[in-house]
Length: 223
Image (cartoon, rainbow, N blue to C red):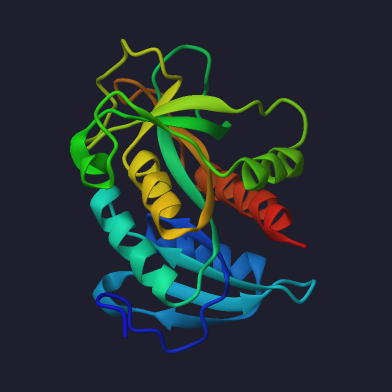
């Protein structure tokens, strides 16, 4: 039995990982038929169901920050997850991105030390699984080229001088952990605000962006 998750329903080989438990519920209600809660231990809500095409899918909350996400992924690996896509949020660090846009992660630079135990030093980049990332790009369609983001250990909103287009708190350590665990992983992020906290998305707009990202991810994970 995993140390943190206490599954009460099956866990699929394919998983969508989100930080926020509320986002897990929202995507489960929209992406699979008859979703069943598979975990509520530690407030890390997880759901299992089948897509309209009959593909089994797990949607699991990972909590806040890289260390929490890595621990959850380790449990999911023990439960049989073999492919995972992070559907998360990020902060635009430059002027090129606007709130509401989706960012396909081409590489994630460790801007904090949470990926250190996984062998990733600060300043080093971690890559997603190429095949899964390409499938995610195809599902998104034109205009979504892979981008370089930075993963911080604290909220990156005030760091606006970096070269990366966006910052988050999970992707670099999560991708590093996935590689170590033999899980094919990729990441798709929603820009929720600009550096400094400007332009923050309204709840309704964020929900629409979550659904768009979730649908693209479901297509990418389909056979």
